[in-house]
Image 1 (spheres, one colour):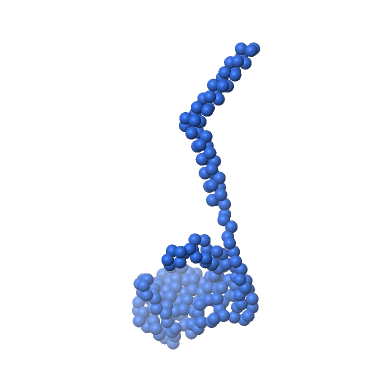
Image 2 (cartoon, rainbow, N blue to C red):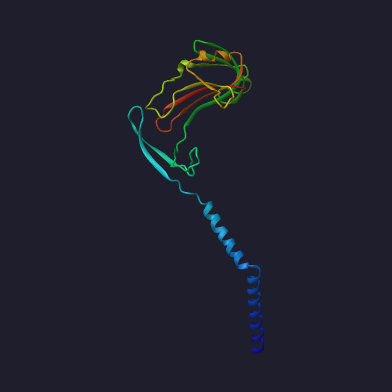
Length: 210
């Protein structure tokens, strides 16, 4: 019995020595530590970072007060690459409609633009075969181009984009300014958005060369 205990003790000692040898020889302990550390770091990075928020009281054009929520933009830099403190509105404008068509600008009469649709790119006004050859009339008299200092939104816009990113945009305040596009095949974006807080609406009509 005693002999059996001695043999077991010798085996245990040998196993411990072999374990120590592998730990020292191949850095097993270090690898285990690194694996644990990487797991902890990864777990921390996967956790959602709490946003830094700020709230400001503002007033609409009728004097009604509302609270705007802003989030801090992390890593924001200026034109020189210096880090700056920047905040952005957390709300998103409400899309009333955002339709995009391709077709031909047929004519302009009485501050109205007559546009014949060839293809719907995005929109729900009409679908399929009903779209091809359908004429849309954009009434520019329904647009308000005056800036309202009490509104969070810009005034309505009517514009043409020729594809040049360096000054290729032109804005107009009447349909007559687009006479040079009559007969052209164009892409047109007809959209309206609503402010989340004040319900102010912004309407845009943008023409692009195909």
